[in-house]
Image 1 (cartoon, rainbow, N blue to C red):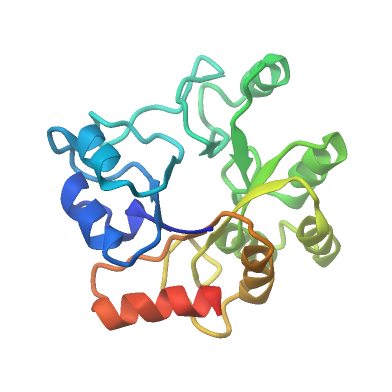
Image 2: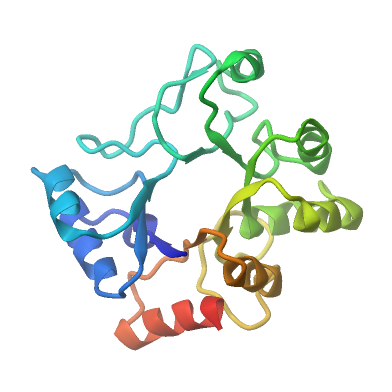
Length: 221
C-alpha cells in the first residue's frame, strides 16, 4: 500500500495538511511536525483514510518524546531509535529486548544508534523487524558507514515492515523529491509491487498538484 507522510507538509496545521494529502487518493502516515488542530483525531476517523503513525506523532501535540528513560513511550507502528547523545542511548536496547510489544525500528544514519551498517547487520542477525528508509541508507553509503555488501543483504532481508522513500545529497536528510536516479528507487518499487507499505516522505510545500502526483507515479510505476 502506498502512503504519503504528513511530514510532506510539515509545519502546516494538521487538518489542512491531512486534507491536502488526502486529495492524492492514497493512505497517510501520521508524523510529528504539524501544528495541532482541535478534533483532528475525529477528523481522521471520519475521513475513512487508512493511516499509520510514525515516531513521535501525537494527536494533541506537535511532537512528543519517543524515548524516555530508555523506554519507547509512543504507540507508533515505526520509530527512530535514540540518537547517540540521547539519555536513552545506553539503555534503550535492554528495554527493547524485554518488550512484549516492540515498535518497528527504522534504519537511520550517523548520529543515531542504528546509524551504521554494523548496527543494522546485528539487527538482521537477530531477526529484528525493520523499517528501511532508503534516503538514510544513502547517507550511510555516502559517508562510508555502510558497505555495499550490507546494503545488498538489507535489500534481501525478509523482515521489513515498511519502506520510506525520499532523496538527498548524502549529507543530511533533506527530504527532496524523487527523480528517476534516486538511490534505491528501483528496489522500493519492487517492494511496493510486492505489497509492502511504502511511504513517500519528500517535502511537497512547493510542489503543485501535478508535481505531487508525479512523485507518487515515480514510486508506483
